[in-house]
Image (tube, rainbow, N blue to C red; front, side, top):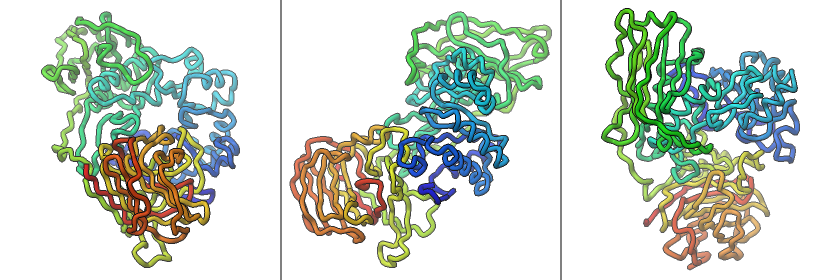
Length: 569
């Protein structure tokens, strides 16, 4: 809902992603969690709790729409990612969900720290009743007493967030086990699923796998994927941890789970300190050394004749194995125990389940840089996605748009569609900006047709060498070529517009198409308006490289067409 009376359940990629996930696993759990909210909910304040009913209506509409338009059942809904919760809002949300017949949708709170949510629940019986799960972010495998006293399910509802090399894999292996052993958490959610964004943005390659070259189709199935398989192929939501879990004498840990129907899965990890550091929180030093561990199967498990064995070894390439099936472990009649030799940085899964499989995939296309010459005229009659490929919106939303009143060459454009700043999660910019291209680009020519929709105050830009994005977008530097509806132009060295390199008058007004060209070469830049030089040889010393970009002066409607970039290196 970009605007108050606006509802569209076909924006973005998330609907597609959820449906693709359900095709592969119809039982997969779906959760929603707002990071930010549309600005109109705040009634002029950067705050989602101004009108509790309105915010609850917005969130519940999304859940209802997921079912109505996509036949997707949302299982859990969160409050506000890593920001303040409002106890009254949580109660209003529960009431509205129930009123809509969505009693089965569970509430998770507060996707921040264990406190103050846990203490608030203990002091407020109604709040305790309406929250189903306490979710904490990056708990470092530990919980707090208040959270345990609530007797609610405890989840690490955001974790990992670490470069997906073997150290990231070690981090993931360690927390998947120890979040339960140390902190009684029965779910651990990795942020993020797949690194499909420009690598130089914050938290580059912090996904379970990497697929960040849509132009080449190259991807990498990274080691954290196979670490996940050690747990996820041999358990399901609804399985239970046994009480017999814990730490190994010489470092590492083990967990055991059952479906209650006789199946057993044991997961053992011996990740060393240096091989398993997560991005956060701080990890106190511990030692792991070679050891023998004996496991005894008792009760109904003593009847188990044998266990399948899956194995991973991280570290040196010569000794490295990822999710390899070893010979089954057979327990001779009358024997109810087995002993394993364990080295550092190993992961074992021992299970009664026989369905484990190391999935295969075709050899990905080879890695290639972003095309040196790239153009997009946005002439797509019925786009599959609302956003154009390769553009990465950092602030604002840039969508395909059909100009009904322009039958000519600007019938299909890319339009910035937000008309007010959202209730932000991070320190978003006050301008809108979408970046594209190769961060290594230095010498570039960027050309784009632009259309300002707001008279007097409106403005748009094209830019090169943009050096920051994501949570750091406000402080992005680069070379920004702006034109304004009041008949002026500017060249600035930053998105915020503080560093003015050049300015002047130009024949520009709103509701008219103009072609901007920006050329940056070495230490100099120049700009053209409709093919005629407007400013030349403006010195640029910093940054040396970065993305190309388009954007607007504030949250305003504006259109872009016939985008073209050529990089000389």
